[in-house]
Length: 473
Ligand code: NAP
Image 1 (cartoon, protein in one colour):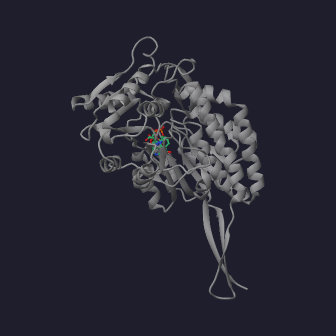
Image 2 (image 1 turned 90 degrees about the horizontal axis):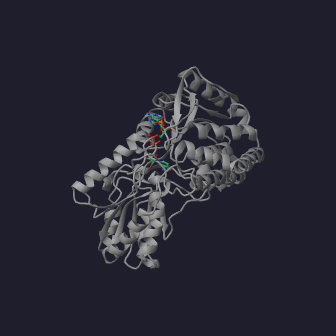
Image 3 (image 1 turned 180 degrees about the vertical axis):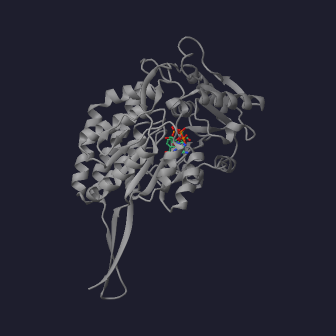
């Protein structure tokens, strides 16, 4: 734990394991309610001074953190692969993405201003101030264990807020590494605080009920997000919710099926499918369905699973046994209801895999609405593919989900792409683009995928309160 500028060991601990090998990596402090309250008290005590620092001071510290993160890129990526499992190249990309938020908000800090509004009364003026909301509580997931932290910490700190953060229990070592780096950058005691635990419910409850916390920012499952949001609502706290997804991908008749299969395969199997923007239903126009599937299966069979520290590995383990069991259930259910299993479909076994949690990269064809995978977030390496006939049909089917985070479109027709973009109810749309994300672009979802946006100028607004001052001259 990192509380009020000091590292604390704690009396009890929980184990952190490598998901590829099962190896015990570390024992991490199990926070008590007193530790969490101490962290909130430290953030509260530090708030006044921190919020009064100039944006230039805050920017300089974030910039320093950015430089340190780039300098430690290799070590951080190595740790991430060991703790979370993604291949080293993907981990290096994530560290870069994480650092991008530090840089973007180091700059964005300087662009927070207010505005003047004219009045109908000659002697009246209106001034709008933007001020930090106060102490922020942050809860983060394990699938992007460094970038999900900086996507919250950087804008909160830039705005002048202090923070208490609870990372996922599977990836606290990445969080500790980020906090060591922020400490080295020189953030004052109490401004950033870290509490680790394997029993998160009490932390969530304290975050939502303690009067000193003014804002909760959460990234994780929709189920937990709804629970925390309802708790926070009783105390009228501001919330940002970055939740689950069920992205449709639409491959139109005019698209090159091989190019689309290549792109969608890359984004589908990224992080072993454990991404909120992973395509969950791939709709392919019937006229190119067979060619698309051929390329998708061919490329999927070539993926090499294993320990992400080895250079030839393109797909790592799942985070835990429960994830493997969920995928086995989804495949069994789909096949029983008529899906064609074209490759994979089972856990990987053998000396390389038995100590970890590996699932074979899988392609299911002819998926229908009757199957669990059609509506349930997969969060694993299963590409669920189905054919469509008309624009109207695919628009209706793509929108047939409670979620609304990301969607993908492959077409060369501008007007078709534009119509689909307008009609799809998702916060992020990639058109012939499998990576429509950047620290400079607003990331977030509609409906059950959450509330608010991270990154971009919207990202800092989540941590600012608006104050109106009307006055006579
Ligand atoms: P999760 O189970 O909801 O956990 C997320 C975080 O919440 C973890 O730190 C977890 O702690 C904590 N948590 C769980 N129950 C809690 C409670 N009652 N009170 C307070 N905290 C609680 O989700 P996950 O499995 O880690 O992450 C995967 C999900 O995140 C997927 O649905 C994915 O789509 C979503 N996600 C969304 C985005 C986005 O930007 N929209 C980005 C990444 C991931 P423990 O680890 O100890 O359980």
